[in-house]
Length: 80
View (cartoon, helix red, strand yellow):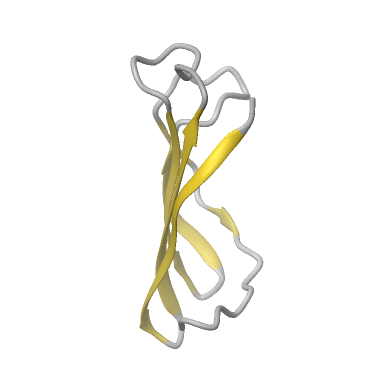
């Protein structure tokens, strides 16, 4: 499903942690939802994703859901 980027922001708290918010607008309703947006909100500290909420389908999870902590590949942003 084609998606239009709405927001892709990274907020640095210090040199070792940041939050990231990404939102896309879909052309139609998101399956299993009453809206046409996909999103991801993550808090990363010391390159580990400490907390992540998203409404991406997969792994038998319903939308929205919280993901377990995972390793995050750090990519420096111009805004950081």
